[in-house]
Length: 624
Image: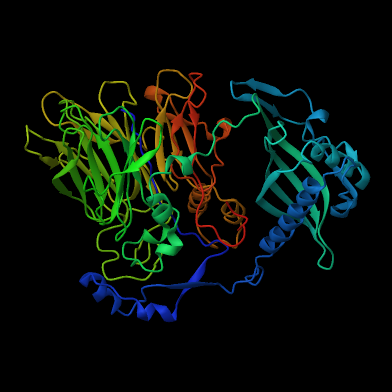
């Protein structure tokens, strides 16, 4: 069974822009009427404060390669900025960035051999694999001409670019080699949409007293997308959809930073605003509605879709505007009466609401779980005709019981970043509803799902991956290995599960944030896409000897995998899964969250949508 789900999560890394907590004068004036929060304020930890930048200048830790990486990144950014902002017909002069004896390979499509072309209903994709041994352009002026040819088509208003340095190494003395992933695109304003991705291997002369200059540019690969239509695939319609729902202005647009001024931090993930929502037909009119989870103190919202597509807030009318610590929601017909009931995961449990003939919800049961509920998914694992529930948990219980300061995730836990088993416990609940008696039985232990069940789980998804007729379960875990539980269904009793992730090469030991099943190669076997984290800083730094000196090579490899990005695992039946991430080109999803398969253009082939990003600082960290 495929699930519609949204997963949120976070991982604290040491990236540029992080800071230390510093209480403000206003912290001592914060007042709460809730007795629990009031007692927290009297503890030794501050309730709210501001962050101040760390005094950690680049280079003072004697990591010379990072000082050089910062220099050449800024230089290349400045070169691209000049190249795309010169809107005249004359060729841009970039000789100031080039050494006298600079050389380069062909850089623009007109100079490259015929590409491999993929034509889709959305547009054409041109993939180039240039001759990496050929440096045709010799001398500063010749290389400037090659760059001019590349940039000429992008000298338009609205052109954007993004450059990431994922490798840096010394060649000799002041000569350094750096590899960059480059994206450059121009919009649709002049009916000439274009997006181009390139990998450059460059060398730089980095004498201390002079600006760094490029001595060579080698194009490793290039992919160009030209849309078939000059209109955008999607149009922003959020304001019009929420025109009659005031919560859009008064609640959703306020943002986490503003809420942080008056809400207590207690549960470890609140400071990042990690909340989910449920999508389903609450009132039986055939239109999908929204239930939006909020953090403690802010009312959850039930929004009904109207025939014109707009949303109406009925949270108070339907008595669903409760202010507990909600994390995830799932619409499903739990009692088999034909309408959509609602399960809401909150701190320490799952609340089950019966749909009352499409006109309201009634709370029928609360299932006790681990504290740090993160995600809900449903499937009929025992094939009795009733939908069962699986609950993912993140942090271990009582981790933040006496803490109100904004402590990072994982503080106080003894665990291995790359292979942790110190997280919360997930739960499987068997649906035992009979008539109007709502009962769910915790069968986690009886079914074997207590095995490998102390990891930092972000998301789960059910699918019959082995085509034997029953529902299997994949769990994406932060800080290490994922789980693939094969359903050993038997007509003789309760099914059992066996974790076969290691056996079938599906552990994907990384920073699992999300999971989605889809038959991307249309061979009849369901494949896996796992959302992880891609970090240019991690890829650049982890191989260096200065990073964790003395650690075994296998542990260094595990850290490196942590920064490698998303994974696509091709299902090969009895032979397990094969990692096709590199060949498919799906690694660089940045800091990825939800990542479902979706056939955007209705051509019968599964596409991927990857939500990404993290807390935005005042400037680009140069990492994600």
